Length: 185
Image (cartoon, rainbow, N blue to C red):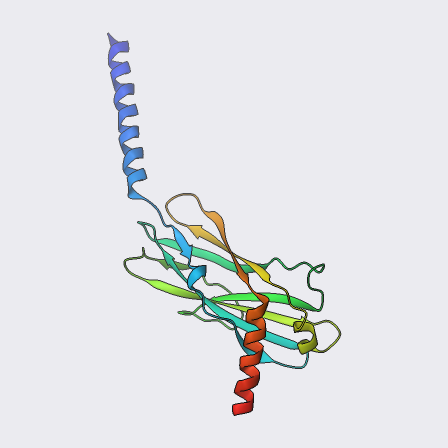
């Protein structure tokens, strides 16, 4: 008889665990989306004889049902030397709501999309090999770029990435716009 009660007890514990698992599953989680289709156009922010810094903005949001934290966000260009060797590229990513000069992404808790949106500012710095940055940028190719981010929320933390492509024409347009702006000034 004791074994029967023990079996009922185990069945009850199993049922309670199942109910708890369904409850947690239905609670949802954070789900971040970098809206690369809504990104801004490239602008040339800074130029020296050997360096150019371009930037653009990408809105992002937490479209999930729970709040979550973006721990790290970085941009990784897919631009091997075989495709473009005239300049070296480095990147920085900061939040528009908390811009930092050092490029550090400060871990921030974001509510779900009903409450708040933000913008990531991505900067691309090109340093010419051999001197002249304008000559180097004449050789630019389309630049594939991954936005890589770490999410910490209800579930175990994870890394995710979103790919976008910066067409070479956009770099040339940004340089031309900057040249025209300087002539007008």
